[in-house]
Length: 455
Image 1 (spheres, rainbow, N blue to C red):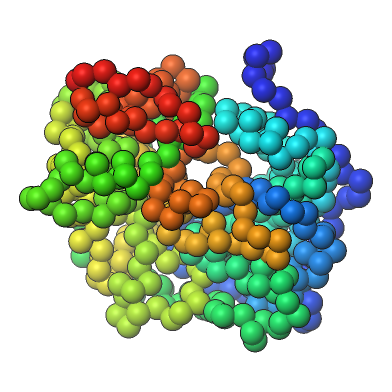
Image 2: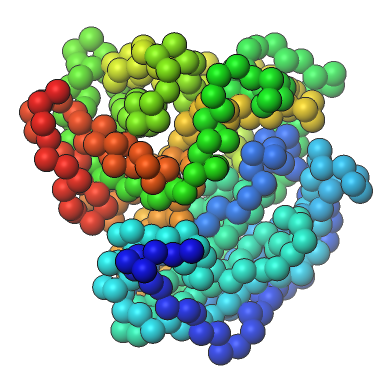
């Protein structure tokens, strides 16, 4: 139940039923192999993007350009299925051209009112902005669902749900930019800058599988047999609220000073360390408890030979840093992140792929913070002809952490994660707590979270 004091979001009004958008011309009718990186159970969900554009987008031209984009990205118009009936271990895509779902709606809300609401988003309410396909199974949901919601003042909200088993963040960005490019002109897919590469066989497991390295980010241990608290299960049992903290370039530089001169680091490395430490401290975990940080690393240039340009499948693995709670500080955390990144090589990736051939292996989420970086994918640059988006982010946040771009601030990063309502203030305090100098991180809408105190 919603508290009466919580902001409300009006219902979407659908004047027409959603339609299926098929490729503009016949596409190959075949079965697409999915790699072991594609169909991990960890990835069996849809990546849900939300864009807010000031100028309206014409639905009919969007449908036309989408139809043309699906000629190249035709698996998104297909349907996922089990390779073997009643066996969830391997999935594939039936490239049958059945189509993507496209819904158009109206909402009695202005753009400014939406931004006020979005300052404290409610997951259940945000779901209104994406058409819900009722289906008995995840595999029965079309891989691509789109909703265009027209606001009262002419602004528009564009939401997309793209099946993560078919593509990763780089792949989704590639598809969205191809669609936007076709929307802006009469160009054909031959004129789109990068053509989609469909084959996933470059990431096939070796025969026989050869797990040659240690992979601490995975486990075969049943959750009930693990020692210590299961943080993931705790989080899932709580009422979660969204924390959104933006770090402008000046504050990122200040964080990096904790590592200089003995340690040079990237923005991702220092923010990942700082966020991990803040997350752990806010949850009050025991000092000797082992915690992990899992974060995605692009492998396209790690393989030998390098993967082809345009590969839009899941071309990443999760690097894993681990430490005891009492060991975590920004400097040490950065070193752990750097060491985890340095482990990712061609052999490491192939060892992961072979490890995943065992259907009992799963990503170890029991005491892990998972970070996905969206801030370097160019998602904020999407332009369908009326200018770049005023806002870009997830439809709603989850227990996984996202690093997002900030519109108009090239070097800023917005950190978004859902935390238990009982500890979110504590988490945001630690995120703002750089040192005793009084620097304060801002939330996404520029409001101070806390006045700093000496520590």
